[in-house]
Image 1 (cartoon, one colour):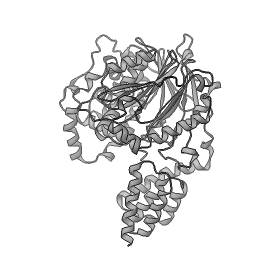
Image 2: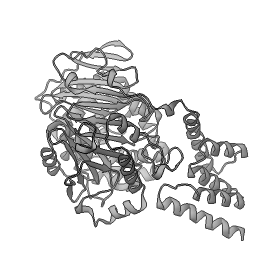
Image 3: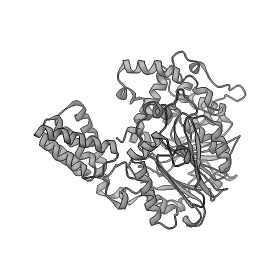
Image 4: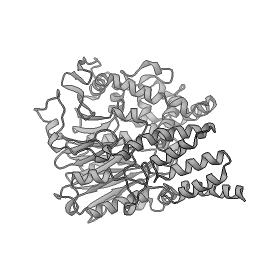
Length: 554
């Protein structure tokens, strides 16, 4: 289950890559004749510190990479690629290593290739030229070992639509991101504060090299965003005007062709909007092909709104006379009130549960500050502090987040979580200082005196057991797939590592069901039902197996 976001992303990416064929998109490259195409010279000061003119790339003591680049779109792309060169190639290898595991069937790949060749035909027409140019620059530093899949530039372009394609074609239930904002009476100083968990998990190796990128473009506002090597789209970020963007996936109808990737739309808002009205105007210009809630916060407006977009319509959710905003993975605006898929998402997924949990935690804290926001993001319990078991997707902290992030837009301060997940130290950055005239790109940009300490949970036996549980859970998945056999001690230890998580009893029940030990299967399925099961369909699945074993025992 924890890999669901990755599978969604990967299916989309593979689909796009296999769709290249002889389509026009394969032949297309951006026009870079107006730019200087000279590749930058990088000075390697150490294995974790690189310089190129005014640009830099370094790893701070918390393990976060900090990237600073400036210039026109091609300069930004080339500098980003040159500075992140080794990590960029490593990240692609990590990503591509999963493809054959996910879709080993050549026949299935062939079907995808023919369908997506048509589906993907207009993707490049929906990405603004400045971002195509930047992607082109980055792509010049990707490995040629994957050219048999697609040329460098096309791989880079398609990567930015991978989440959208997988989301649209597979319509999978999403592991969900959670975000909230508070201002006026609800924040400690009256100024806007926002926080979010980005629950995107490929594997531990993929999340090792997350980047706090600080970008100063020739056109638009300087901004920061949290990203990974090769990704120029924005999933979490703030600009120097104090405008923030974060994205939460939702559900809608499947479109007939690829449009603007959501991360490219949010990048455009981040770079070119200084207030809520300008953000809305940019969103109205673009056609997207997935459903997404974009939380936009603005220092100039001292509030936050949700821009809810789908392939067919858009709505702005702005609660009058409110001092807080909460977002999980369903739409809240009137335009989607009767949308069948959105109603199903609310009824069947864990989105509404997490929404209510955020309401509960915000009500318990009358005034929100960065420290309180970090505690909410790190919370692992359910409604009324119910123990859910570690990794339960009903929790705000599902122990899989790529990053947690906190914004104070008026002060231009942002806190980014160090590994693992959102449990490591929240590192503070001051955009006024970073983009000021006296910035020093040879050392970490962080404001150490404002950092938020790592979660004490990291030092507990429970966390160590959770890490062991992830390993054993993967082993059991393989055993179930191959219908193998394990010693009873394995199952006992597996359950003891995460005893409050319903999954350990469900999977043990499946194991005994395969072995035709129906009484043991029954006991485990019954025990799974005594714990908080993540979604309605998953609960129904457990109940289905329980009925089966009861019939077997009659």
